[in-house]
View 1 (spheres, rainbow, N blue to C red):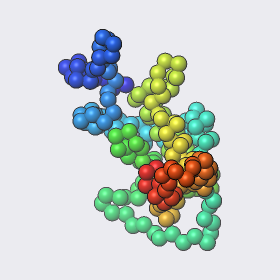
View 2 (view 1 turned 60 degrees about the horizontal axis):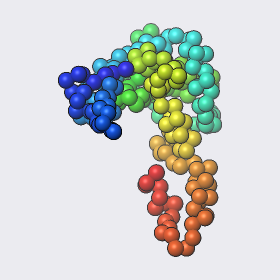
View 3 (view 1 turned 45 degrees about the horizontal axis):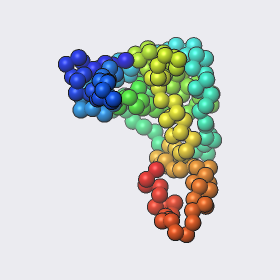
View 4 (view 1 turned 60 degrees about the vertical axis):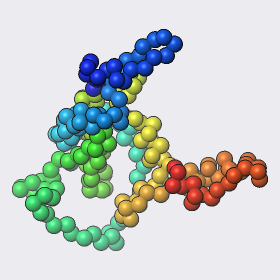
Length: 205
């Protein structure tokens, strides 16, 4: 994992009960964190793209991939607009017409990539598995008995479970289950408490 340089470690120290605590790991959100992370970001991007060829990664990370929830296919009735390549976006095929490895783009530690929704979903699974493996290669394998997992699975699952992501409409909405749970929590409030509506609360979520 990334570490603070000894010269700046004192700036991230604190004292509790006469004990001095020094943060060895890089503090997320500090002014110089993004610059220090730039090297790791680029390495992870290149590794994830290259590791797309390793078909064994789907089986290796099956425990995480099995938690993915899939929407219904659009079927033959869907009409797609044909995209044209340009100098920057050259398409997903190489000069021989063969699909290229999925490219990954990271903003600090958030990975972004796009892939075609195929019947067997293999390319999507392969891209995600390659991204997981790349992070583990750079930051260390998951070993919860000794350290925190480099990937925040709780955060990822909470985001997927509590939100509906519609890639056709390009919107993210709160799930009906989450709204039902929220309404249930609000039912015990007495009339003297300050209340608000769901639309008023949504911007705070």
